[in-house]
Image (cartoon, rainbow, N blue to C red):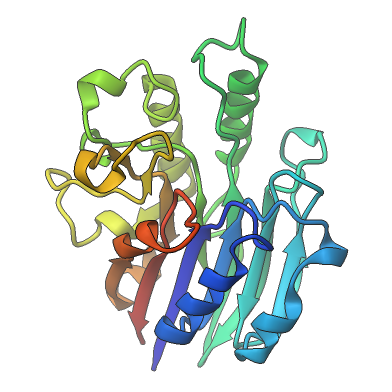
Amino acid sequence: MTFSITTWNINSVRLRMPIVEQFLVRYKPDVLCLQETKCPNGEFPLKPLKALGYEHVIIHGQKGYHGVAIASKLPLTEDHRQDYCGIGDARHISGIIKVGSRKIRLHNFYVPAGGDEPDRTINPKFGHKLDFIEEMKALSADGVPGTSSILVGDLNIAPLENDVWSHKQLLKIVSHTPVETEGMLEIMKKGNWLDLMRLNVPETEKIYTWWSYRAKDWEAANRGRRLDHIWSSQDLGPSLDRIEILREARGWNRPSDHVPVTAHFKF
């Protein structure tokens, strides 16, 4: 039995629904997790997803900001929305999916970007990000006996040296500062999470999932970062077949600055 799950910060689901459809028609993952949908629940474009076989959709959105959604070909149950930092942002959603005899809790996150200045005393957005990271440390991959876990999303942190185009030049840039990267690694350690994107790719090899809109030629500059992640409970590691990062999607018509990342499993 095979199973695939894609994570993609779409940067406005209504604006970019054409490329979402293009992706789903061509690649057909079993589950699609979107972040930064920027859409109230009542205005979410359900029809095109259901027309392509994604009949099970859970959403947590808000007008103009944030927003996460899970669209699945398989039934989703026990949906939950966690209000991290208690300010009402739509940044987390989860649900239970059954793949054969396996029961898996899927978490979809959109972690705050953190603004431009890595100093919480002058930048409240950075403080919010650090508080969010702190609360995530309580999330365990082994939370419920008999239930595996997969966590995906735009976590807005590139934790390893080769998750960015230049470790030295980005040490003081939000998304790669030591306080953020150490915080993310602690989330993984405390929660017993497995970094599936690095499971079969050595830390010496570059991995990017995001290229800035600010670059005149993103492909030539290739100044990327790995901001999008797929983690799992330890028991799913042996079933991982491969990870695909669809770099070409960054060059599609009216693209997001993030590209789809898909984990393929064989059970």
